[in-house]
Image 1 (cartoon, rainbow, N blue to C red):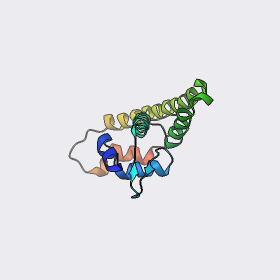
Image 2: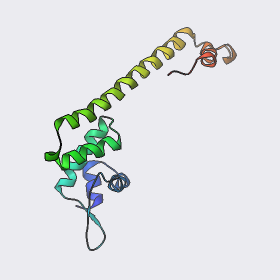
Image 3: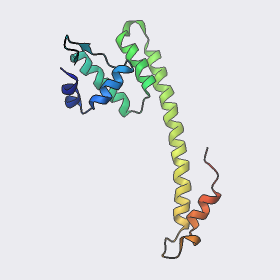
Image 4: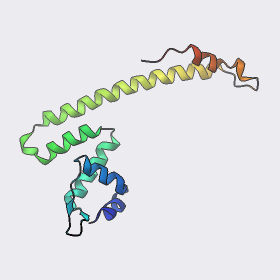
Length: 135
């Protein structure tokens, strides 16, 4: 199938498919006419990429797992687990940061009456002026 057909079949833009091809994540064969052609293995690879993207994996992680997937007999399950565990650690860190943000915003919102008085008396603006950057 051509790139437009693959894009339509998967809901991914043609530009994204071209980008992923340039990044080495997706491989296309070129016809004599210069068009990109994709086969069923490309469709399977694309579904794998989309699954990983939906889980928040970076392009680097996706590339690494695709490399393992292509040469599966030369790799171990431990290598795959290592990539997943590293990503899980990043997710846990981000969750902790989001919880910290949630607490700070909740405190600001709870302290504000949200009335019609001028913003020069707004406790949220005052709190933001005094809020140290979250780490």
